[in-house]
Image (cartoon, rainbow, N blue to C red):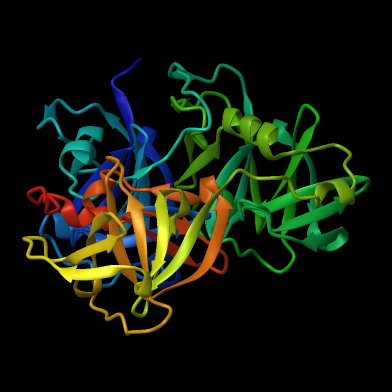
Length: 458
């Protein structure tokens, strides 16, 4: 192993930062439609960033380091990192590129100092995110176990197709390509798959090929491509899949390309090549193989078989409203739901502002939590008002006053993204829904976080 690392360099204000590419999952463009507010998070969190039906906490590094306030984020890029099963999205003012540099000898433990093309660059290490960032991450389970690969150089020629997708260049190994089709020469059918990654299925000969825009797959931009994109069909064993691209730019033969093999089997890029002064990422053959195995269709599959839905493991939530604000609560945490007429309410002095009093039902008493002041809203008196009895993580039970229960929502468990250290925040996670909608999952017991323990009267 040599002393070199690959760093993604980006600018925040006038300061240059970098992150080791081994920690990076994707780069996502930020816009007004994919940012959602986050309740009770530190002000260095700009909210939740929704991408590919996933959600990440968007970190304003500039505000965290007192550079600027991140008031204008539209059109900027977010670098999604995954460290020890936790993910963050870090907002960058401008991406400079990916550079191979010597390992830094100058470090503070959390930050390494290096030079990239004459610029002093601060490398944010895994320790920086785990120890210094005061914003909760999102738990993200790995689908595959990590595998280690040694750094090496190619000993044989590799043939690379350089493709353009949504204004970006991406390379792919030619040996993975089964066929190239112009989309206006084949039939297609629009559909949305369960992960919202694939949007179209093509009928190519006797084969059904489900396809996605390559830009959406690699996370370099939005999913739109030209009106009649070029379809790149890949094959591994008996599985096929399609990528839509705008143009085929070039065909390269590489004799010796110094590159790195990512240590995680789900890393998208194998190495980077310099093409006419531009750094072009080349898709990892290992990642493509795993992706084909997981998502690809067999060579011959009927349209009836293809469009049949598969059952999903689901989790159910109550959709509730508190004033004009809407939230989810996990049904499994709810003990009972009462009408106001079925309980007795009485005031009780307490140090916790959100505790309004005591709820008594037969022989049981609960603290009554109201989030009106915290949320800046008001529960209007109505016959639809309800008292929800919750069981907390520690096994205690508390009561929450709400405006009404509006619906029951069941979603696949993988659409539910839990935040780290959730007991300290009023939001314990987010659920991504249809039509770019995002729901916050309420955590009423957070009103007790960092407070002296309250006890019910004897």
